[in-house]
Every structure is written in structure tokens, then in C-alpha cells.
Image (cartoon, rainbow, N blue to C red):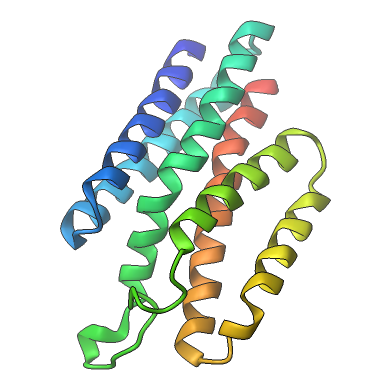
Length: 174
């Protein structure tokens, strides 16, 4: 079981990186994000029904979970932003508009790494610090409703993805 969990975490990390490098084309991102979430769910299920792991496997799981959080978060967050985009209804300037909150992809990578690190380090309060720093950094840009919506949707999707990746390691520790 442990090997399956580690393989799946590694595949999520690699697939996330490949999807990120491929770009943000809607069908690819949405399908890829669904596959990433599915693979992470299977890894969590395997970790949950598993019987404890050795130190080496746990350390490998930690490294792979951080990589999965960092690389897989971009396609998942982009897919959530696509799903939240009101452009289909003819509304412009929605949360998927790339001109709103530029630089968010790199901020997201750092955010997910920091969230994974604080949770794995046993300091869940760090999650509040990370999100507060991100909010303060973007404060002046959040006056526009579309920017605020993109910020909230993107931040929540990104943070939940990172926490879910760390959650697999928590299940391995049981």
C-alpha cells in the first residue's frame, strides 16, 4: 500500500508539472485537474487503509507531498477559476481574466510551499500567517470586485489543494 501511495504522489507531482508547463487551455486543464484530484484521492484512500509506514517511506511521502502541492496546485487552481468564470454568461472581467492580479501563478507556488511546510512542521497557525501576508500584499489591488473574487477563489483552491496533499502524509502517519 505504501508504495502505491508514494507512486501516486509522485505521479501527481509529475503530472502537475507537465500540466503547468503545457499551459492553461481549458479542456486540458479541467481534465488534468480532475485526474490530479482523483489520483490524490486514491493515494489518500490507500494511505488511510494502510498499516503504518517506516521512517524512510514517510520522509519520501513528505517530499512527494510537497512537490505534489507545489506543482499540482496550479492546474487545479486554474481549473477552479475556469469553473468560476462568468464569461460563459457574457460577463467580462471575471475571475479567469488573466489581466487581473498578474503574477498570481508564482505567488501560488510560494503560497502552496509555505502552507505545506507549516502544516508538515506541525504549525497550523502558519496557514493564517501565509494567507494574511498574501492578503496584505494584494490589498491595494483587491478593490475591484473581479480582483477580489479571483483572489478569494484562487487562494482557497490553492490552499485546499496544498492541505489535501499534506493530508495524505498525515494519513500515512496513522
